[in-house]
Image (cartoon, rainbow, N blue to C red; front, side, top):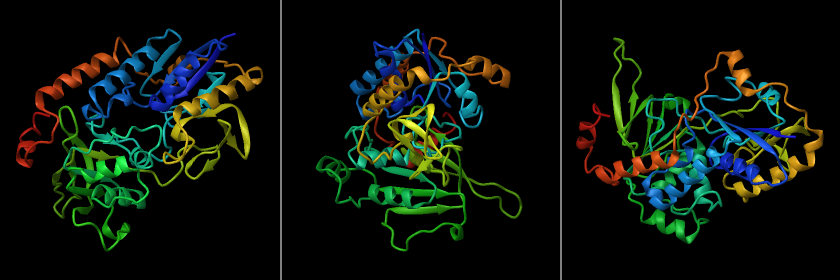
Amino acid sequence: MTLRVAVTGAGPAGFTVVAALLTADDLDVSVDLIDRAELPDGLLRHGPAAGRQRLRGAAAHVDVVLGDERVTYFGNVEVGSRITLDELRRTADAVVLASGAPQDLPLDIAGRDSVGIGSISHVQAWLAGGADVDVDELDLAMDTAVLLGVSADTLGIAEVLCGRIPAAVSDEIGVRLANSRLRYVQLVDPRSPSETSVPQQLPENLVVRNELTPVGVVGRNRARAVRCVHPPDRYGRVVTEDLRAQLLLRQRADSFYWSGIDEERGHIAHDGARVLAGGAPVLGLYVAGWAGRDPADRGSHSEDAAALLAAIRSDREALTPADTTLADVLAARGIEASRLNGWSAAAVTDELLDRFAGEGQLPLADYESLMDQVDED
């Protein structure tokens, strides 16, 4: 009998899980892959700095997984808000939460899909030498970076990017940081200075900007700047300001995303990939990737997928069969999910690489040239 599995998150962990399910000879599966983004292009957003060969390999992997007739993609669906986790569980025999670090917030502004936008978790995993992030994956060829939100995490990463190299990093990462071209880092937060806590001693090239709200990313092919608005003045006028940034790191939430399940250090608590609620495993609910472990911890997406398969095999006979389909649940809620409609990761990657080759990969030489592009972008 076919095992129906729903996987939330079309990022590295989600694709690793789906690939493992498809290649498990002892399991007859059908998979619904769900993501809050319109298209499953999360693996392609590191840009040419990650290497043409690496990007093309990732794109080929995406197309192989999504090209399998057993896989159906549902985009623009955020589990936990647009549909509940309980609703999703009715559509599958097993549900896998692989949506990344629970406290990483999406960037809900224009241009949010630009190359050069990442997360604090990604940089933390890179600094720790985690198996999920390649040493050469973080692009340090740019000269400016903007981190969204003032917190202990963003301040710590900002100081590293400004040149304070941690003693615990590997020699390879230390060399890359020492040779970084970054010369100016800004932290942007819509709150007032009295609402944020900032150390008195900061690196000279680190600036905290309060009372600025990001509204868009400037850049045709990759992030070049982030457009912000100041609070209205006493006449109600709103002033915009563009902050140069080729690296833009998203904000983190202060609270745990998933309700009704156990939390452990900001991540989903689990036992052998089985999600815990009230200290007990929830039959049919599993976790993989950074949703269930800190990016800086030991482990890897492939190890998580192996643990998940072992749990599903053990639980197989006891799983509650699905009593509806995801398509029916979405239709009943009036939610129109995006589909692939012939989309190809390989074709998108080739187009992106060609465009980068045409304009050059290095940051623009001066800020005035950048602003000349704003209206076009």
